Image 1 (cartoon, helix red, strand yellow):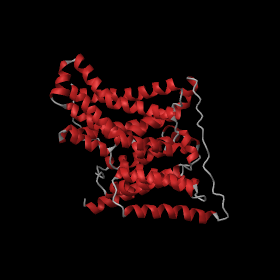
Image 2: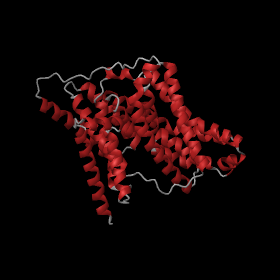
Image 3: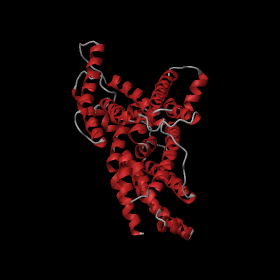
Image 4: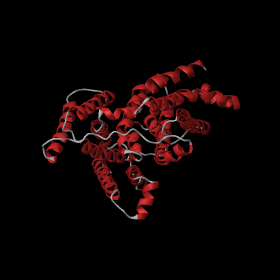
Length: 383
């Protein structure tokens, strides 16, 4: 199959997936509602493209849509989501949720070192595996991938001098685990209020409704101005050379300013547009799923699984101690592991109004990921 055919197939799969997800959201049938209660529509956007590629054995992991998503769709989504947030709403992200989030990052950065030591105590062959054969060098990029995203992952690969073959296998393992974790967090966040009730935690968020445009202009003119400003900013950023991280930071700040300075800004409209964009991003991500070519020692895989579970347990314990809404555990965990693409998607399954705040945590994750990974490398160097 030539590259053009691959590009066309990828485009068709994504468009059909987005159309299906948008349509099924409107279905009122009882059976469909029960299914969606356990398998949110946003997950269909993730799973359908992946199922297609595996069923027909297509490799759509390198189609242009991935570059388009990174350079245009994700930045556009960031701009729209952040512009849906008024400064009054920022009080929702308080000190306690940030502490829960940082606890998750701290565990991700430090726990692999402790686990390698414990595994070595249980069996000296593990010390030879992780230290002697230097398989620890595959754990450092996981820290970067989980906290900081692909940029931090590549930087830490170079800092740890991770061999290419090991790095490739780590990427596959990381991809599988994050996909599974995303599904689990979708379910957990919907059940978080049960834990809140059981532990006596007030589940209410101090939601401040976004301002509605109060102007003599007609709604279509307000919408036209809102979308026109967003498109103008997106086009303007095309001519300004910026890294991906820098563009995310700049557009986040720009979005906040737009949503709070322009009095006729339609916050409800940009939130709806952002919702569709997130479905589109998830569908494109689904094209990349690849479960083949996994070749890693079983003990390393077990260590990573324990590492991931204890990360969650530490965040859950922190949230309970601080008496803060347990939903922040899922939001913070996905901000750490999933980043800007999936953190707001998981959050939308709980409260769409919190999507901008999930992005705030995801940005914090991106900014700190490399630093946390450097701490991991330093601690392994002490061994």
